[in-house]
Length: 202
Ligand code: 5GP
View 1 (cartoon, rainbow, N blue to C red):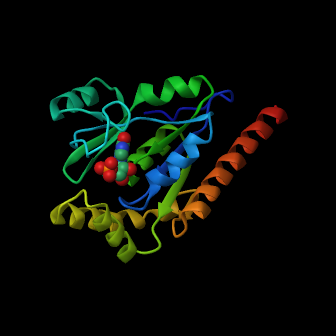
View 2: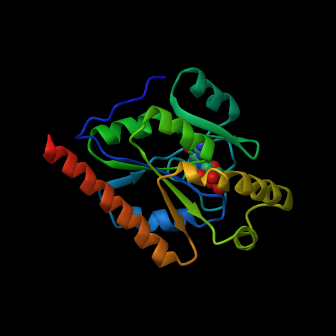
């Protein structure tokens, strides 16, 4: 697919990746709740909802057949198979709000992020890393939502994903929640300023 050149009035696209259990949702929820100009793109997944998750808010929970149908009908911007489930970004969850000048946050796996980068070369890629893998394991176990087999798979995948850190524009280490939130807010401000400067120079 040809790279998509951003219109200067469009919203910015922030692509976040982080191993499961890094605390990225906690960080990004804080950022999104305090900023009316940035929104999450709600992804689709075939994973079952966790306790407290709502369809259409946390994810669009789809069966495999529907998900694969969406791929066939070219409705996905990117998708990936993660721990035996499909996860993907719906094109219209990104394109419409961006056209209306809203900045968008994707929270997706590394392979998904690399697919998006090809389509939106101007996107801002951010990796949220745990202080170390031992701490990551403690956090996933404390969450208590996955069984041992899935925890092992998630840890393996985390180790693999950390190898791609150098593909990202920013790395935020989540050893202190407030510090991590501030770093994310700061990088958003920085990129909005950059965008404004580019517009003024034209
Ligand atoms: P969880 O099951 O913990 O909600 O998510 C598992 C992984 O899937 C996380 O790394 C999360 O960032 C990723 N993920 C969530 N939505 C998407 C998506 O739309 N596309 C891709 N590629 N990964 C996603």
